[in-house]
Image (cartoon, rainbow, N blue to C red; front, top):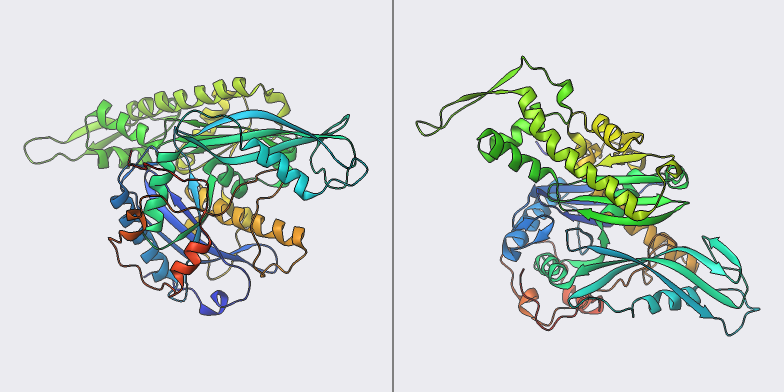
Length: 472
């Protein structure tokens, strides 16, 4: 029997945020609000097997649309009193790129205190840089600011000076890939409040301020990709997407041990280990056959672990490579590595990560930010849901930052921007030039307000305009 959530919580005047994680193996949506202690009260949760997604990219819009609809349906089943209009959506995939850039300006009034419009101008200038054809900026993240000869400033508000500049971490994505996500989401009558890079979302869920100050690596091992985010000196310094994940391990088991895909997945999750030395050479697993075409077989647990180890070691070699690319000394990362995502549930992944990277490692879960209450869904404590919880937290950080900036009550509607220094984005989504993206409705999603189209038109983002937005 599914857990039902009390309407008393959902009817509160506190803001409600929804996060939508479109992964390669699952699609999940979490709806939550903050309680008086600042913890997330989960109001609704739904997940469904992912369809039409490969390596974190939507390749079949119709299939993904229906998978999102099923996750939404299950979310409404968990709490029939919910109404979801807007979602924060995670973005990942091998098309994600990042680059470092520097921006400077000469202030017109050097004796005046630096204010938010000057920060906004610095960030807006970054969006004018040249990019390869088809790429679009999805995030501009200030890392540290400089005012005259004062460097490494985290918050420049209130400083005075002539020269004002900052180092930026800029994240780009393939526009066609973003457009496909956009279509699958809006086909379910949802407005995309913002796109969030998934390793940043996961970091919000598993890191504390102490972790960020110490310096830490977040390693999110998903189904289609492994996402990396490195924090040093209190800010995000580096992000990367490694084009291997849990699905590659499953495919290796399927091919290497000559079993079916569903059998390979079960072998991985129930008996698999990332460290062959910990596997028992005398333990065997019986895999049933299929009638006369495939006889049953005995598989050694140690052999299974060797297959898993080979792929996990390759992923972690890429982690070491990206550490070198980031030019960050592991000695400066006292927080070590935090492994999260579905791959973090693999047995002995902590030990293997420590062995290959020579860095202290722990498994990251979103427990720190989740309230313990009767409405809580225990499933969300697992690292596989870190991204989804992180998307919700990102939404609250945006809202709280803007409420503080504008000196308004938290529940009052304001234009949302992202907190400094972690992120700054354009937050309204533009409709695609191909209107079929929003006219196609292969599923019937209920509980929508009559004024949806007016709200949708009013909240459209200009990041992703495209003349020819075809599937990839």
